[in-house]
Length: 118
Image (cartoon, rainbow, N blue to C red; front, top):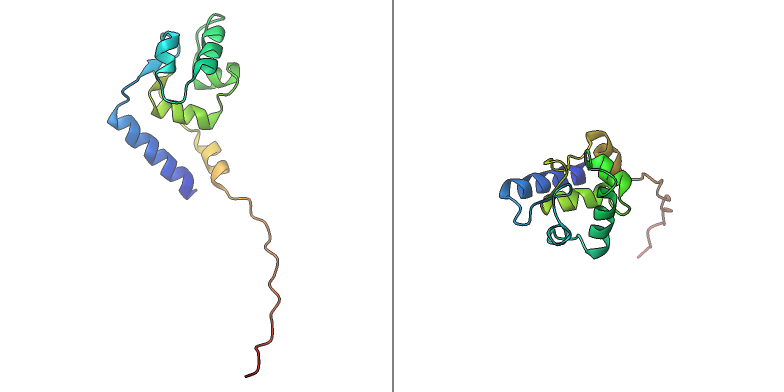
């Protein structure tokens, strides 16, 4: 939970600071997409190819149609200035809570050793 809160605060801070390389996936050309930190040639090409089939409605539509765009990448690209239909990526609170729960594994019990006699 703490990790997701930190992530949300970092995203909010970056969005408030403004993104130097803002680009909307429905309007940007390939060079503008690649100017967003983390978006390379392969990803921008996949975005452009999918955009030929129709505009992206929202971040879910984008991540469903473009391979390599999961929630982690969506959050990072949004912080770097990428938008979908003018909207930044908003982390679903239910998914954030689920991702923040650590996998609780039972730790093996340490065997008690008798104290060494002096």
